[in-house]
Length: 83
Image 1 (cartoon, rainbow, N blue to C red):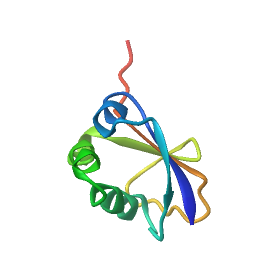
Image 2 (image 1 turned 180 degrees about the vertical axis):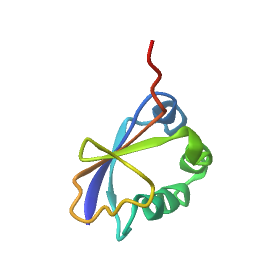
Image 3 (image 1 turned 135 degrees about the vertical axis):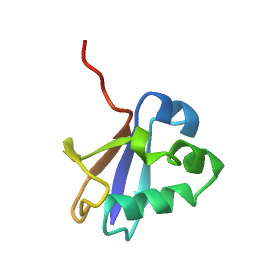
């Protein structure tokens, strides 16, 4: 499966790009994170503390154990705060 992976805020800065298209056989978001972290040091560093990362699958908030079969887009971003 091919999925567009989007990065926002400091994740984009650490990885060095706002989006990339990934070929994956990952079953869950967590599996995809493992694949991304294995790609290079930038991905590994950006995704090393998953407590500081939120995820959305096709623009719907999801958790790390969410299944990604059929997803077109996975977005990673820091937690939002209100004010």
